[in-house]
Amino acid sequence: HTKELREYLVKQYPEKTSGLMDMEPIVFSNVHFAYELEYGREASLLTRKNSHEGLDRKIEIMQGSMVCVVGPRSEGKATLLKILGGVIIPPDSGIFIPAHLRILHVAAEPYFYKDSMYKNLTFGLHPDSPGASKERVKAICISLGVNEYALRYLEEPTVGDSDDGGEKWSLVLSLTDRHLLNLARAFVFDPEVLVLHKPTMPFDERVSSQVLKVMREFVTDRGLHWDSEQKTLRRPRTL
Image 1: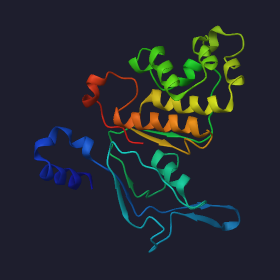
Image 2 (image 1 turned 120 degrees about the horizontal axis):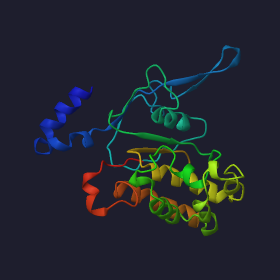
Image 3 (image 1 turned 90 degrees about the vertical axis):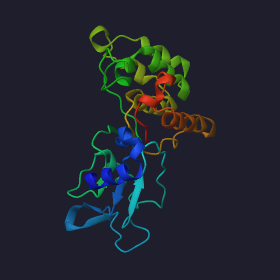
């Protein structure tokens, strides 16, 4: 599939061969999956063969797109995102993802481990990485609308230097700030493909509008709070 796709792209865009990797789409093709439950029963999702309501078709998402998955309850939306994010790995997923893309799956419920806020928000990044600078982390939090009082905990020491095990900051957060920091951590990590479950559900209209604005900026600017002059040198971001 990959070889044929690249040969097609070379023929279609001979002048852009240096950027072909950024033109490879994410492809959904006949995606089917069923959960195995107790008593020998199955909960079938994404399995409606020969139905326009299922995924018995080919869908292509170009890199640099912002896509929303909508539909009735219990029809497989979350399962589809989990397959895309690598949380569920069926024998034959029916999803093609270009191998060079990093994918981050973010669940709807926030989870933080016992360490400082800064360590939580930069999880997965090397401490010396430019993406892990406190200035960038704070700027992303501010752009999402994290409460100023909560942001003071960015200066809190790590577990090894703290007597409270790094838990104090997580105990005083409002529900809104917990969800905003969950999103901030994802934007700080800066994957090429970001999979979010119900990113605006916990918020009121004002906060939801701000979150959507930041999500669009993540896609259009190819990441958040980087040098704008180097935008074209970065890979597209897909959400």
